[in-house]
Length: 354
Image 1: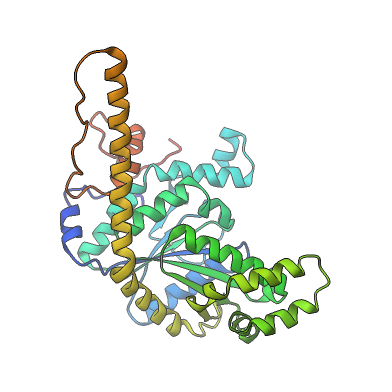
Image 2: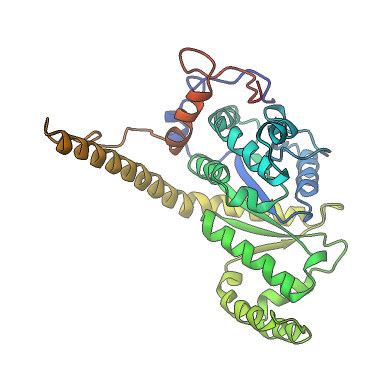
């Protein structure tokens, strides 16, 4: 299924059913990593690896600037947003165009969730893989990236997969930069986290694993560096000791498929961890966010009543609506504004460039 096919309505995928059931499928993998780390190659190999075992994944491409796609995505942002047209229309550079493309596409995230909901109901795929733009900061620190992450985590078991380039991380300073970014993404998303040490067919991954588990070995490697960053890197290594102890890490090769079986075991373990620990936390975050918005609306209403000197204080909302999703708060109003019909229903085969 792709974005040009008919979008299922909310009546076809009821939120009540999805909430009542124990959500085990699909497990959503958000694949992140620095430019050139091999994210798209990793996704392509994971796709072919799973198909060997009759576990075809549901693939979502969110990179509007990708030219050559080595796999066939079920949902492709390029079908809805034309990257070069965005650059011309808004006079943007490459990175600005990617951010704007994601922001435009975020108005249709509710349709993406509906499609994943249909996958869950029909049980056609047990894994959904979301391939993100090459510029990691474009996704991790943008509003659209945060919206997508929160929407997925509030509905499906979600795991962040951080792809690290072993070949480019042999320097302890570069390695530490990668680990610091991984740490920041972990604490920002608050989701189960797996670090994939990619390109293990080119470089032996033992050095990275040893640096993560032996502080003294890492310090010895830093001593060979003459950069002024050495002292800061040593201090950061000591700080990240606790981060390493809780980190799921697996070396793989996106060319040969080496260790993909171990990676999938970590995915299954992380999905169980999400259900037992993270799901409860995300339910609390969702409820707190809705309560905060309700409180803000009530305060504004009270201020208007006091300033006008009319009426009495009445709460705009008294409680949360049953089954209210975080996607309703973020996506519905924006989706309605983009709708082309009079009733606010989404038009099948949407294209944001029309």
